[in-house]
Image (tube, rainbow, N blue to C red; front, side, top):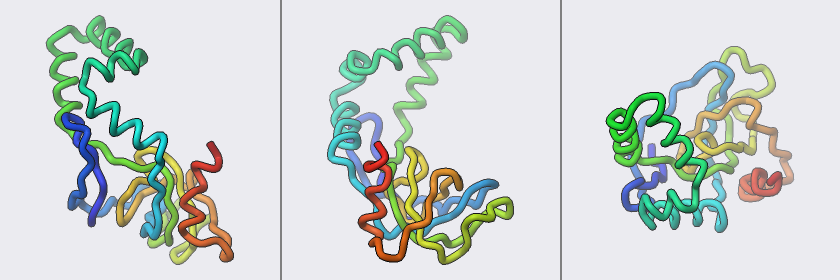
Amino acid sequence: MKQVLQNRKTGSPFVAEVPVPALQSGRVLVRTVASLISAGTERAAVELVSKGLLQEARQRPDLVKQVVSKVKNEGLLNTLSAVRDKMATSQSLGYSAAGIVTEVAPDVSEFHSGDRVACAGVGFASHAEVISVPRNLCVHLPGELSFEAGSFGTLGAI
């Protein structure tokens, strides 16, 4: 399946072929019909990463504190290795989507295959053909609402 990812080194978004997520306890699989591209949050994330590590550190002092804490607890070499590994990976983009439930975990009773849902959450409601979303981050989408309108759910909640 296809998913939009961001290269952590360059900040550039790209479309990648990735495996369909496996069904996990407490989650539903959703075939995405619409996902929202946030002109604020996502644009800022892409711009921040593309400015480089030093600029990101200036704008995200919370991350600097995490790195300093890691150095104290695990040492400089382990921390450098962890930062390099993090920078070498790509991250998913998106946090608000809508679609059709295709599968539900056995411990999920409030959703069924075929249900129309709006989904939320960074790392869950991403720009991908199929998403795996915890049940508490999904809501039934009323029939009179389009999937496009449903994809604004998270933004509206914020």
